[in-house]
Image (tube, rainbow, N blue to C red; front, top):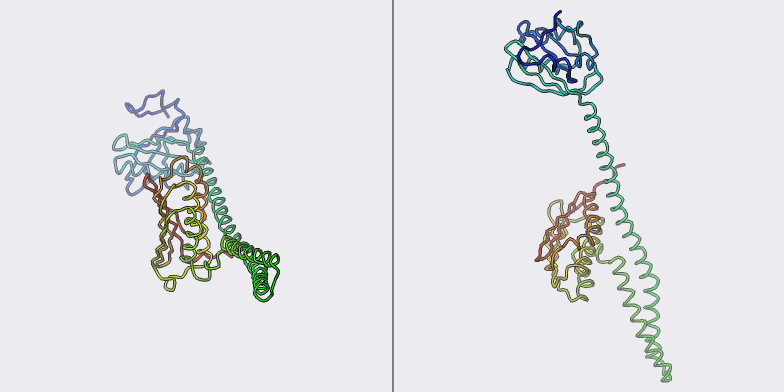
Length: 362
């Protein structure tokens, strides 16, 4: 059969020498009823033969349904649609016959003729799949790191509490017993002046050690956090950290702990994050006042730390950025989120968390 071209639409040299697979079709019947059985091949170029692994003589003159029986329906559907709708139709799909991922565009040349141009997207598709697989792997690693960070925070708190309890039960009780004995010795015995001076000095030193041990216990793990609640614990934290720095502070609370109780683990995480934020304020903000609000509502608990400092500059972001990143990641793992607003008038950071920790998968 003599080769046929699309007259004015295709140049002979382009059609034959282009590396893009091209097929020319003739409508041979009612395509609205017969579909691909009414679409006959008029011509294919060498690229089409090569990509589709067919010979021109075995294609030209036959219908699409005859040549490609059993292939993915999208390849014939775009030809039928472009002939019926009189505009270009596009599809892309895996082609089992060629072993490639192809993109095809079919467009009408006249009322009875159409052409399909094929583009090999196999490499691109493999790259996309590899990228998605890599993104999935990165997401899995990111989730694992978030989980690890959260578990480390809770494990650290558990260790802190054990150490604090040991200090209280062993050292604290011993110091208190020693103080009582020293006071009895001073009050009940007529000691020589030198001995009395030593006892009085030892009483003062013991009282100081008791005070320091209590401060250390609070620093390690404040008992009021789990015994009374996060609001009193944060008030004590602000007083302990900010007052010595001459930074004024205010703590407000909304929502009842009885109506919206939070898991101990959630309170521990929020408390430790709030401590990190307050330390950042002391180190970087040059603030005179800090406002802290603890808000409880259906399913959620929020801690907001707001200062009137100089905002977070690029330099300070570099200094505190890892800490803020760690806070954000730990919150994300438990289903929470962190939001930050900063300008020259100060910084506001919101820590939002669910009242209940997500159940660990079994």
